[in-house]
Image 1 (cartoon, helix red, strand yellow):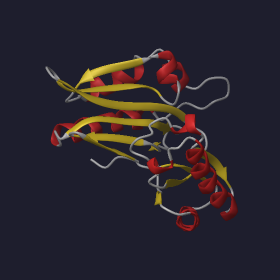
Image 2 (image 1 turned 60 degrees about the vertical axis):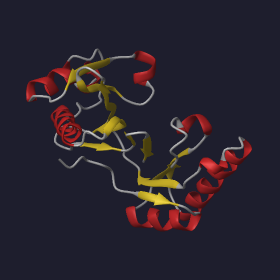
Image 3 (image 1 turned 30 degrees about the vertical axis):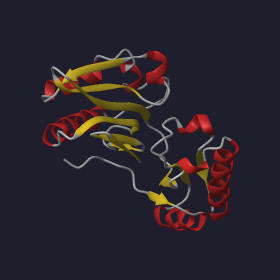
Image 4 (image 1 turned 120 degrees about the vertical axis):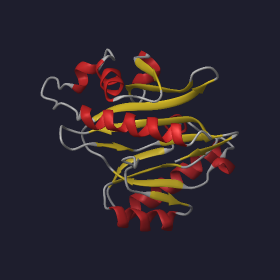
Length: 209
Protein backbone atom coordinates (compact mmCIF):
# COMPACT_ATOMS: atom_id res chain seq x y z
CA UNK A 1 0.00 0.00 0.00
CA UNK A 2 3.06 2.23 -0.02
CA UNK A 3 2.57 5.52 -1.88
CA UNK A 4 5.44 7.06 -3.91
CA UNK A 5 6.22 10.02 -1.69
CA UNK A 6 9.28 12.02 -2.69
CA UNK A 7 12.19 11.89 -0.25
CA UNK A 8 12.55 14.78 2.20
CA UNK A 9 11.67 15.99 5.67
CA UNK A 10 10.57 18.90 7.85
CA UNK A 11 13.12 21.30 9.37
CA UNK A 12 12.38 23.79 12.14
CA UNK A 13 15.49 25.92 11.64
CA UNK A 14 17.64 27.13 8.77
CA UNK A 15 20.51 24.86 9.79
CA UNK A 16 18.22 21.83 9.98
CA UNK A 17 17.01 22.70 6.50
CA UNK A 18 20.60 22.80 5.24
CA UNK A 19 21.32 19.38 6.74
CA UNK A 20 18.26 17.90 5.07
CA UNK A 21 19.17 19.51 1.75
CA UNK A 22 22.65 17.99 1.89
CA UNK A 23 21.12 14.62 2.69
CA UNK A 24 18.61 14.55 -0.19
CA UNK A 25 20.96 16.29 -2.65
CA UNK A 26 20.86 19.61 -4.48
CA UNK A 27 18.98 21.24 -6.09
CA UNK A 28 16.11 21.25 -3.61
CA UNK A 29 12.71 22.79 -3.04
CA UNK A 30 11.88 24.45 0.28
CA UNK A 31 8.28 25.17 1.21
CA UNK A 32 6.29 26.09 4.27
CA UNK A 33 5.07 23.34 6.59
CA UNK A 34 1.82 24.54 8.14
CA UNK A 35 -1.52 23.04 9.14
CA UNK A 36 -3.23 26.41 8.73
CA UNK A 37 -1.94 27.69 5.38
CA UNK A 38 -3.01 25.50 2.47
CA UNK A 39 -2.01 27.57 -0.59
CA UNK A 40 1.67 28.13 0.12
CA UNK A 41 2.50 29.88 -3.16
CA UNK A 42 0.03 32.67 -2.36
CA UNK A 43 2.12 33.73 0.64
CA UNK A 44 5.49 33.35 -1.07
CA UNK A 45 6.26 30.21 0.91
CA UNK A 46 7.61 28.00 -1.90
CA UNK A 47 11.21 28.33 -3.10
CA UNK A 48 12.46 26.16 -5.96
CA UNK A 49 15.74 25.12 -7.57
CA UNK A 50 17.92 26.00 -4.57
CA UNK A 51 21.43 24.99 -5.58
CA UNK A 52 23.50 25.38 -2.40
CA UNK A 53 23.47 25.70 1.38
CA UNK A 54 23.27 29.49 1.45
CA UNK A 55 20.28 29.47 -0.88
CA UNK A 56 18.50 27.13 1.54
CA UNK A 57 19.28 29.39 4.53
CA UNK A 58 18.05 32.42 2.60
CA UNK A 59 14.85 30.60 1.62
CA UNK A 60 14.08 29.65 5.22
CA UNK A 61 14.56 33.22 6.43
CA UNK A 62 12.63 34.68 3.49
CA UNK A 63 9.62 32.46 4.22
CA UNK A 64 9.73 33.40 7.92
CA UNK A 65 10.04 37.11 7.08
CA UNK A 66 7.12 37.02 4.66
CA UNK A 67 4.88 35.37 7.24
CA UNK A 68 5.99 37.92 9.83
CA UNK A 69 4.96 40.73 7.48
CA UNK A 70 1.51 39.17 7.25
CA UNK A 71 1.40 38.59 11.05
CA UNK A 72 1.25 34.82 10.44
CA UNK A 73 4.64 33.69 11.68
CA UNK A 74 2.94 31.59 14.38
CA UNK A 75 1.48 29.39 11.64
CA UNK A 76 4.97 28.28 10.60
CA UNK A 77 5.82 24.82 11.90
CA UNK A 78 8.99 24.63 9.82
CA UNK A 79 9.79 24.01 6.18
CA UNK A 80 9.61 20.91 4.03
CA UNK A 81 12.84 20.20 2.16
CA UNK A 82 12.64 17.98 -0.93
CA UNK A 83 14.78 17.26 -3.98
CA UNK A 84 13.66 19.01 -7.13
CA UNK A 85 11.67 16.81 -9.51
CA UNK A 86 12.45 17.68 -13.11
CA UNK A 87 10.08 17.00 -15.97
CA UNK A 88 6.81 15.18 -15.73
CA UNK A 89 3.19 16.30 -15.81
CA UNK A 90 1.43 17.56 -12.68
CA UNK A 91 -1.68 15.64 -11.67
CA UNK A 92 -3.71 15.35 -8.46
CA UNK A 93 -5.56 12.66 -6.56
CA UNK A 94 -8.01 13.41 -3.78
CA UNK A 95 -10.57 11.82 -1.51
CA UNK A 96 -13.51 13.00 0.52
CA UNK A 97 -16.06 10.95 2.43
CA UNK A 98 -19.62 11.28 1.24
CA UNK A 99 -22.30 10.76 3.91
CA UNK A 100 -24.15 8.28 1.67
CA UNK A 101 -21.54 6.64 -0.55
CA UNK A 102 -18.44 6.68 1.62
CA UNK A 103 -14.97 7.41 0.15
CA UNK A 104 -15.22 9.40 -3.08
CA UNK A 105 -11.97 9.53 -5.08
CA UNK A 106 -11.02 12.30 -7.50
CA UNK A 107 -8.42 12.56 -10.26
CA UNK A 108 -7.39 15.47 -12.48
CA UNK A 109 -4.54 17.63 -13.67
CA UNK A 110 -2.55 19.03 -10.75
CA UNK A 111 -1.22 22.35 -9.54
CA UNK A 112 -3.42 25.33 -10.38
CA UNK A 113 -5.03 23.47 -13.29
CA UNK A 114 -7.49 21.65 -11.07
CA UNK A 115 -8.75 24.95 -9.62
CA UNK A 116 -8.95 26.81 -12.94
CA UNK A 117 -10.18 24.07 -15.28
CA UNK A 118 -12.18 21.88 -12.90
CA UNK A 119 -11.29 18.91 -15.11
CA UNK A 120 -11.80 16.12 -12.58
CA UNK A 121 -13.18 12.58 -12.64
CA UNK A 122 -14.80 10.94 -9.61
CA UNK A 123 -15.42 7.35 -8.52
CA UNK A 124 -16.71 5.71 -5.35
CA UNK A 125 -14.22 3.44 -3.58
CA UNK A 126 -13.25 0.65 -3.71
CA UNK A 127 -11.80 1.09 -7.20
CA UNK A 128 -11.21 -1.68 -9.68
CA UNK A 129 -8.35 -1.67 -12.21
CA UNK A 130 -10.89 -0.59 -14.82
CA UNK A 131 -12.17 2.27 -12.64
CA UNK A 132 -8.65 3.62 -12.17
CA UNK A 133 -7.84 3.40 -15.89
CA UNK A 134 -11.10 5.17 -16.81
CA UNK A 135 -10.53 7.98 -14.33
CA UNK A 136 -7.15 8.76 -15.88
CA UNK A 137 -8.30 8.50 -19.48
CA UNK A 138 -11.63 10.35 -19.14
CA UNK A 139 -10.32 13.76 -18.07
CA UNK A 140 -10.29 16.32 -20.88
CA UNK A 141 -6.60 16.92 -20.29
CA UNK A 142 -5.67 13.29 -20.98
CA UNK A 143 -4.00 14.36 -24.22
CA UNK A 144 -1.38 16.14 -22.11
CA UNK A 145 -0.54 12.80 -20.49
CA UNK A 146 -0.20 11.12 -23.88
CA UNK A 147 2.64 13.42 -24.92
CA UNK A 148 2.47 16.59 -27.02
CA UNK A 149 4.78 18.86 -29.05
CA UNK A 150 7.96 17.11 -28.02
CA UNK A 151 6.87 16.41 -24.44
CA UNK A 152 7.07 12.69 -23.61
CA UNK A 153 4.06 10.67 -22.54
CA UNK A 154 3.44 10.31 -18.80
CA UNK A 155 3.46 7.02 -16.92
CA UNK A 156 -0.32 6.60 -16.76
CA UNK A 157 0.00 3.07 -15.40
CA UNK A 158 1.81 4.45 -12.35
CA UNK A 159 -0.95 7.01 -11.85
CA UNK A 160 -3.53 4.24 -11.92
CA UNK A 161 -1.53 2.34 -9.33
CA UNK A 162 -1.59 5.37 -7.01
CA UNK A 163 -5.37 5.53 -7.36
CA UNK A 164 -5.71 1.85 -6.47
CA UNK A 165 -3.40 2.15 -3.46
CA UNK A 166 -5.21 5.23 -2.23
CA UNK A 167 -8.54 3.45 -2.63
CA UNK A 168 -7.31 0.61 -0.44
CA UNK A 169 -5.80 3.02 2.10
CA UNK A 170 -9.01 4.97 2.71
CA UNK A 171 -11.04 1.77 2.88
CA UNK A 172 -8.77 0.31 5.55
CA UNK A 173 -8.39 3.55 7.54
CA UNK A 174 -11.88 5.04 7.90
CA UNK A 175 -10.51 7.76 10.21
CA UNK A 176 -9.19 9.54 7.11
CA UNK A 177 -11.99 11.96 6.23
CA UNK A 178 -10.23 13.94 3.51
CA UNK A 179 -7.03 13.62 1.51
CA UNK A 180 -5.36 15.72 -1.17
CA UNK A 181 -2.22 14.68 -3.09
CA UNK A 182 -1.36 17.70 -5.22
CA UNK A 183 0.77 17.87 -7.15
CA UNK A 184 1.89 14.42 -8.16
CA UNK A 185 4.57 14.50 -10.86
CA UNK A 186 3.78 11.83 -13.44
CA UNK A 187 7.16 11.07 -14.97
CA UNK A 188 7.87 9.51 -18.35
CA UNK A 189 6.69 5.99 -19.17
CA UNK A 190 8.46 3.46 -16.96
CA UNK A 191 9.68 6.10 -14.48
CA UNK A 192 6.61 6.10 -12.24
CA UNK A 193 5.36 9.16 -10.37
CA UNK A 194 6.25 11.16 -7.26
CA UNK A 195 3.94 12.77 -4.70
CA UNK A 196 5.47 16.09 -3.66
CA UNK A 197 2.68 17.55 -1.54
CA UNK A 198 -0.01 15.93 0.57
CA UNK A 199 -2.72 17.03 2.96
CA UNK A 200 -4.64 14.59 5.14
CA UNK A 201 -7.59 15.31 7.43
CA UNK A 202 -8.19 12.78 10.18
CA UNK A 203 -11.36 13.26 12.17
CA UNK A 204 -11.50 16.89 13.29
CA UNK A 205 -7.78 17.58 12.87
CA UNK A 206 -5.64 17.91 9.76
CA UNK A 207 -2.01 17.17 8.96
CA UNK A 208 -0.12 19.04 6.23
CA UNK A 209 3.06 17.65 4.69
